[in-house]
Image (cartoon, rainbow, N blue to C red; front, side, top):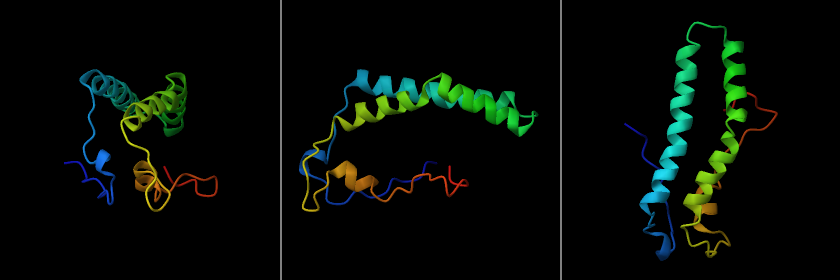
Length: 112
C-alpha cells in the first residue's frame, strides 16, 4: 500500500480540486511506466552481477533515456494545472508543499 501523501495545508480555493485531461494523465502514466518498468528490468537483469556493473548500467540508461528531461516534462504537465498565486507567505501552493524537501548535496553521498 502506498504511503499517504503529506497533508496540504492552506491551499488556494482554485487548487482544492485539480482537473487533469485524460490525454495528459495518460502521457504522465506513459513516462512513469517507461521509467519504472525499465529500472525493474535492469534490476532483474543484474540480479547476480557486480554492483558496479549495475550502477553503470543504471547511470547510462538514466541519462541515455533522458530521465531528467522526462521528469521535468511530468512536473510541467502537473504543475501547469495549479494556480500559482502567492499566499500570505509569498509562496504558491506547490512551492509551499515542497519547501521541506531535503535535496542531495555533495557533502552527503548517502542520500538518494
